[in-house]
Image 1 (cartoon, rainbow, N blue to C red):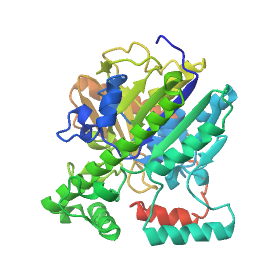
Image 2 (tube, rainbow, N blue to C red):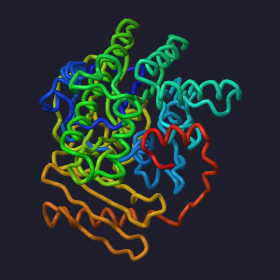
Image 3 (cartoon, rainbow, N blue to C red):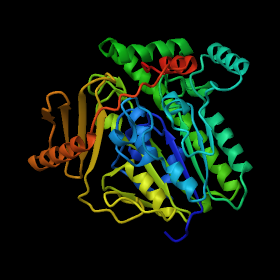
Image 4 (tube, rainbow, N blue to C red):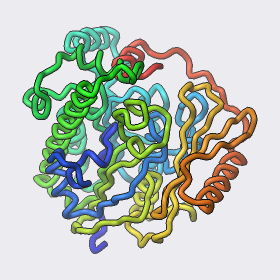
Length: 421
């Protein structure tokens, strides 16, 4: 790295799988902006999320810890975020998103000077009621990329120009229900669905995947790809705004996803708590101030992103972690984990990825038994078993803190997004 960045910018997209981006070999040109970004960035071809769904993936992304450390049994934040560390190091910190599962209600505002989660509980009651009525009228479930950009840029413009900043913006557009706006609605699909029809199809794909016809599956993919193209355009607009402020060449930029999305490859849609490629293989671009055009095939994890930020800020990183700007060992192994489908499930799933192959297993916390599947080799199975045993030793007792009542606005949006709160 030839120039030291003053600022750190993390852009993450919800449910964005790597193999649906044209710069990762997809047959459609879904990501012209990210394709150009790849030409001046380090692009990681084998990047994996630490988990497969937001409630575990985003905590890992923001803390650099595995989900079993990052959150408690009620999915509340249980350890320090990179925002806290950077704030202590003198960075202004701002977070902008609209996913209820990583909102203030679950403690994710920790360390952020400004944290806009697009929820209105805790504000004036009349404002909250008016927002809820408007959202219902528009069938709106999250803030669009354009809104996230406006809010984050407004925050950047409010800062003292001498202060370094850390910005995290999380885009929800590629999360279902897939409702690409305007001209994007028919970019790949032959017909435009109403918001309610799009939501109904998406929910049925989750609840009754066997009922989805091949035509409906293709429609879901077409709409998803259009959302990617829409999100890509607005990432481009945000990058142009950074350039116009002379900020891009003064910042370390990371663009990634919290997890991917499935379209029936393993019998399910959306992103339930499994660890297959379609929901854990994510895009990852790291742009240094002077740019770089490099492709890295070594497996990396979203856990490595926090380590990279710490290194930039001059903070110590754990011996087990690496910076994405360092030379990586070709035989590196990355691990993934997820809790069972039911949040009270005693099932834990684990996986590992290397350039050699992959391995998956399930552990029953009640019996302690481990069942392996799809292991590329005996050595990978042994490595995964060792890792699982280390995580078990670290588990300790159940936390079990009651998360309290779920706010009405949060519950409404979770239901609309296909979550069961």
